[in-house]
Amino acid sequence: REREREREEREEREREREREREREREREREREREDRERSLQREREFNERALEREREERVRERAVNLEQILASKGVLTSRGIYEHMLTIMHIEMKLPGKFNATNTCHYIKNNLQSLSGTSC
Image (cartoon, rainbow, N blue to C red; front, side, top):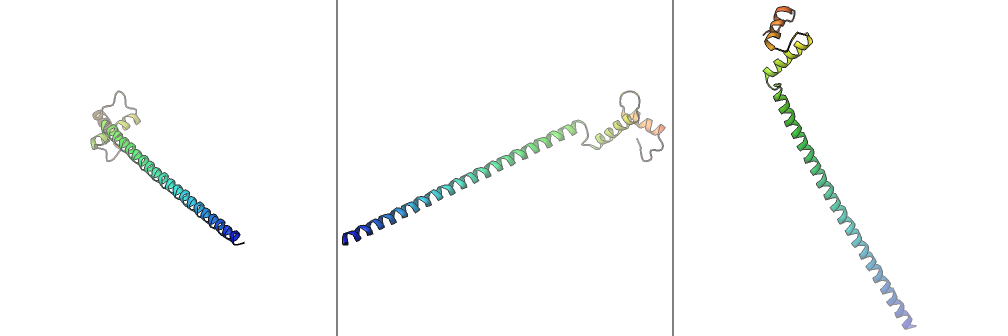
């Protein structure tokens, strides 16, 4: 009877140790899952920052390209804007021949006095 009780106690201690080992394995698996999650989160954040930098770079490139295009068309200066307006007026009034800013100004001055505020 005493042996049986000791055997049961040993078995119970062994079962308890096994449960403790299982709990430790579960904690270890949980730590590994958390580590993987943190690693994935860091990777996602890194990729998001890289994408944002890439978007910003594309926006800067587009802005530079747009500025170069506008500068080449003379639209970034007051003279360029004025000439652009005269070009549009030349087209809208269906003036003959190629565009000439001076001729367009003279045409406006001589034929369209109703356009107040236009001076060349």
